[in-house]
Length: 332
Ligand code: G3H
Ligand code: 13P
Ligand code: ZN
Image 1 (spheres, rainbow, N blue to C red):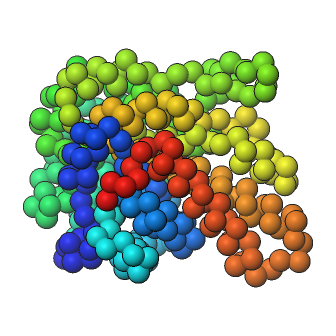
Image 2: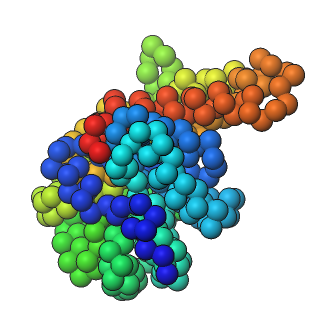
Image 3: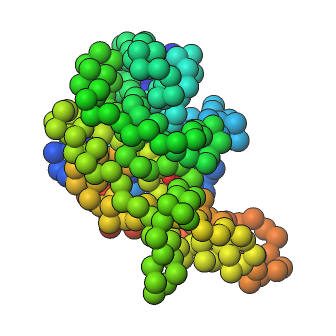
């Protein structure tokens, strides 16, 4: 048993309370590799932004859970080296799908876990979430739960249709499970293709897809039922069109990739939404920069030659999210 406290990590309790009160959101960035982690920590340390490092099932399969955990431990020390005296870094299990997995993360030094039982019947979601909460809270590890189902095209978290969260269920759910935060469904989804072209309109000037707005009425309903309770938005990448264009220009093929407009995320950050999950935008930044570098420099074969611009591009993107969208800079 390793406590996250020994690793210099923090849980989400205090940072969420401050974020809800202060009208901003904490960035939750997924990481799978060293360059992503360096870019996240450099951005957070320079801006003094609290940050959540997320480990997904895909990340565990790709990079190994043990290795990622030690990388997060190293990230705390790296942040201090960068001059951030008291780093506010959470190591979070993203989309945990069983009690055993959540337990193993708690035992291994994660400071926060998500139990995603949103695809189960309501009572089963409550029972499994409560079991995880009862275990995690013994070690002061915070727990994110999910109510409502996100539509998505990504493997592992796919669901055919989006079922918005029902505001009338949230008080019962939060009370009976004791969860610390709640992910809700208001129209976001995972991946780089969040909406089908037929769900969107087209901007006549640019020809770009314009997605339908998020269900802010559902968010408002949830906030009215659970005033001040920390709310989480998954699937919140914006799919910046400059990255999609770069990818397409330098040999990629991503037609009609579309995300959540940033002004809607800005609005959400000012509400009880205090954690915003971003993964796809980092993938896009990295891929765009790598494609460009290799196209322009056919002789490059040292990975550092094309991964350095990729890391720089991701850092630029993380800084933009923190400062211009979530407003978490200067909060740690
Ligand atoms: O929730 C989905 C995240 O973007 C992680 O996806 O399992 O492919 O790493 P992944
Ligand atoms: P995106 O695919 O929109 O980046 O969402 C990531 C996410 O929700 C991770 O849990
Ligand atoms: Zn997610």
